[in-house]
Picture 1 (cartoon, rainbow, N blue to C red):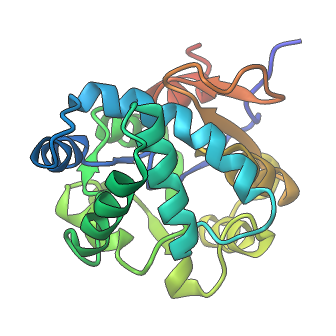
Picture 2 (cartoon, rainbow, N blue to C red):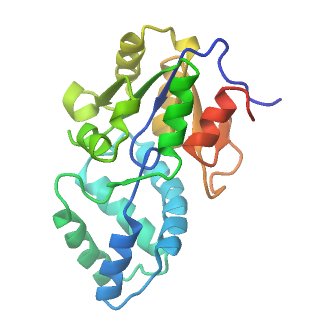
Length: 236
């Protein structure tokens, strides 16, 4: 039986990193090239899609997505999936990542479909918000990329004091939007954090899976934030 979006749908909430925002694959590629391990950005992007699935198994244990250990593990998985998993290189790239573009880091690039997704959702009368595990910088990143103006609110876990998959951060978003959980949809890139977290709070969720890496899951999967919005609005 196909998955169906909420009806009526009054609000849609998005994750930020790996949903509205992308890693700066070009910057990572440049650093790898400088270290003598050239990998094109599109190879790193595909490796990232696979790395997220591996990372999810680690996050099921309840570790914070914002911990240093999680960030280090994620980077190692990405490099391994790109065929650049030598331990010394992983350590070198980890030091580079820690020093790169603080406090924003490598998630400083808009997804190509992000603005179109937000514009479409707002045009259809939906309340549109962000629920993100972040370090306090996500609203500024969205502002700098021209995406904040299309959002009704941004909830940053560092600012509000609770992070996904805790149901309280989803409840905050529902309260801000003034809707019931059955009237809202969440879009994110990690099954255990985004889909299961949203479900525990009573929301339906869409899993972003641009590389078709997650396999069969008990939720709708979409290739992009725009595809998720189109499905939610009945266009897919």
